[in-house]
Length: 328
Image (tube, rainbow, N blue to C red; front, side):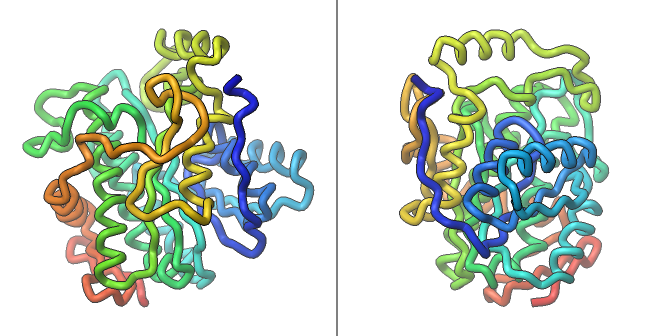
């Protein structure tokens, strides 16, 4: 049943779409669908080999697909700066940005290049910095920015006293925090865009539950074998209870491309406790409903990245810590 679910995607010819995490799993499905719709696709990838393999696979299915690979390691703010510098130098407006890449539950606490807990630093701070640095291009394109969350954002909380989990690491709670933070940022981005006239529409999505590489063996984060959870999810997917990568990509696809997707709204699967089924608007998780928390995570993220969004809506970024700046 779940394997026949699909949604229409509007013609994206001439649209520049930036998609993180597009080299495998849900991201690869998103990349293929965006290419099929005619998008000029920018794929920033950490692993060049995987990116090239993904590009070859898409072009085999979509002859003439327009795809550009760039290097990006979201666990390094310097890498984010490098990518942003290249795209800013090109000067082409961005129409859609999908913040899809992420890491999940390293068995032991690991850190980013700047010393932040890996999941918080990659899943949230890396994307926060990318959006901040690309603001001139996002504003120029009146972009749709879609942030991929997880059902894990529906539990636990932000560890405000120790957001980098230095005192007592809990991998699952840290993962939940990273996705809550990303969701709060996405909602605050939409509020501030409306308030300051930035012209950006920020939406949220979650894929439900599907067998992807997030829980597979990931030696680079210290996971030598796939988790028991992944084997269970595969069985549930085969039974049609959990989704597939193809169906799990649909909420983000809808949130990022549907003409009637609304800023500040949350899209996810509509069946089986929202783990699979056709995409539809969802009620915001309890963890995402506080505007005060959203403003607080915005301020904290500015402090931790050294990047600040211009309140005047001029579309530039001022960075007191490290003085990172992007011209309007």
